[in-house]
Length: 197
Image (cartoon, rainbow, N blue to C red; front, side, top):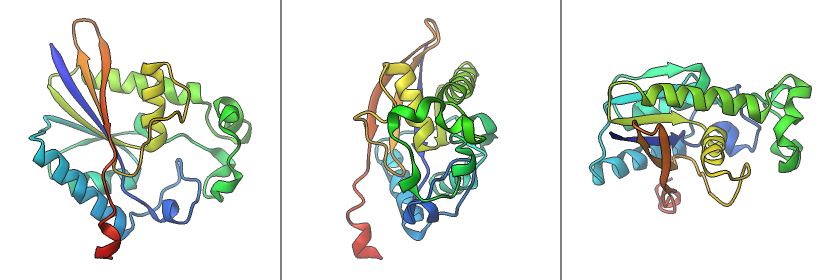
């Protein structure tokens, strides 16, 4: 049996806007972020995409995004949270180390390794996909989406695959082989939001 998984990144937050490191710490959606979520909602409606299971990170920026996309019930899961950046949380993004140092760098400062994030994210998504449903919406974070993509595709963290606010990564899941396949990434055109502001 083939199922669908749609991973949706949250809308723009105050920390995104101010270029602050945002992992386990949280920040509210900006007005732009709320409008981005409504564009994602229109994308799903226009393409006839419906969900019979919805899961979400425990971060408020994700649940706030989700509630602008659908009014269906959902379950929050700690395992779907962004990477914990430890002492770097809330600091300027210019303090981020080079990408090649990401795998273990933040663990030295009270955060997580990429391996730890991958383990919890992949385990939770596999668990959810084995439940009784056919179309899953997972509202989560850019780091989580890139890590899951990299796990599946054998790609490096932060490769050429863009993951903007409210991007959608679509996957197929085969319940017989327990295998995921990447279908597409959708990064919406938000150019019109400047005129609306």
